[in-house]
Image (cartoon, rainbow, N blue to C red; front, top):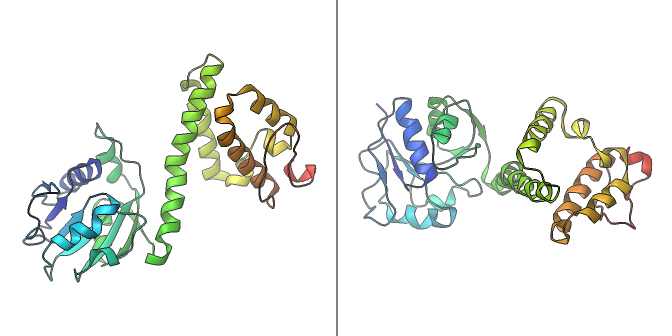
Length: 258
């Protein structure tokens, strides 16, 4: 039986430990950062460093190398160099949100998720053991990959935080807009971003965008401007940037944003 030890009892470490156990791996426990880690790679097939990105190199250096043990990190933006001096190195980044406080994270990890992998082929074996799908991302591409992942998840959540604030100004709750957001994401999956775009930017209706801007709190202008610029760029396919206010229009010809 494959034995996996994890360092880091945070949300990712706990969720992975539970998911690995669910699919039949032997998981002797999750080790807290701060205890003696020198022998952590001994007696296991894999050692997973589920620690913050800034701590990966320091924690890896505390572990005495074991030639048969694969040492993996979960950091989406880091390469394999941070795992020196371990000979068998790999990275293993789950492309799913891992919220704290319930079983959603452990279920997502074994529900056909995508994982970005690199290094030792054992990382692919772990992904397949969880029922996931590996995609190889080389070290020199990992920062761009992780930026895309953060935009897809973290930035979208941040935008929905803005939806909640702006909706409250109209006396409404976030709940009535969540289905709209979900449908838009579903359309992107089916049609691609350009074909899925609707609304005033897709129509080239700069007057409506300006009216929106005038109706919201000035503290929301920077985020709204950025979102409107991205929508108009997508609609025009050539626009580099758009600053929306009452005196500006799309940098493309009006028909380009129609």
